[in-house]
Image 1 (cartoon, rainbow over the protein chains, first blue to last red):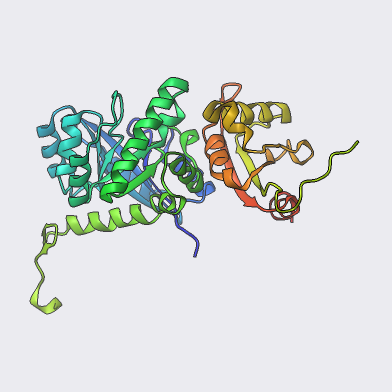
Image 2 (cartoon, each protein chain N blue to C red):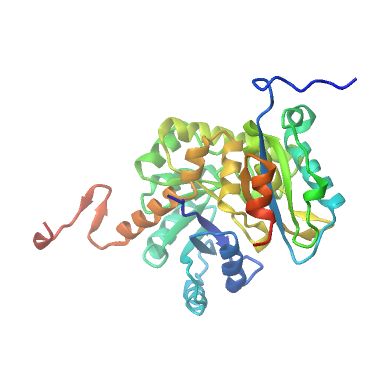
Length: 247
Length: 117
């Protein structure tokens, strides 16, 4: 069975990207993705642009499955929590932009967050510890390995980045935390095919099979889990309201 | 005097990675080879690269379609793929290196990916 690859982190020109939705779809088709997620970037308390993004996506006819997501970028955990609460029902997936240890911790403690993006960004350490990895597993928050920062860095910076990513991979392996590999593309030329992203995963110590899972089956699980969380009958992990007729 | 071939059990097992450059421009063989080698050397260094058994056959590179082949040892396919995925540009022009497939022989690489049907 052929794997269906998914890239969960692509920006269009409606947020901080450079290319239009049409160009992204064309490139994703030529790179043979089965589904992609176009992300809207929200800084602090700013308003989202999801409605415009959805309208733009509907205009294009394609076999690709296109999801919409939100990336929340802030330095204050309280703002992050309120934004997650507010935007959860609107977006297919919720990504929290990591880097600040307080935000990293708050994100992995929140079961409504789907992905913690690049916890090692701009840091001198990996941004994750064993407690956070454990919490991420409990709350099914996936840790993201963002390809963009590897692609745009050189020599010393890249070496440090790869070593931090290796440490995160080691932790996630130990605590069985889900990992997703994404391109984080701001331009269509930052996008890479599924197999290439998987080879990046194998570069930082993930087994090839697991690496392939992290761009195919794990993103799929995240999206189905997000649909479940959005359901009104969902209360918390393992607790759901079921009608009598459904039993 | 000619050096004998290695006994079959000791021979290095090879794989052929067929790649395509996604870009509106066409790139010459020299530019492509230079970029691939520098990317692999940058990521793995001289000593790491020594194990890869790398070769880019010049006669199989097609300038018009931007397709070609990289030979490497079968243990290092993922490393080479990762290294070529990290190429961003040639002469400040952005592009994507896409792998079309990996084969065990050069003939199957030619038949499957490089001959027009």
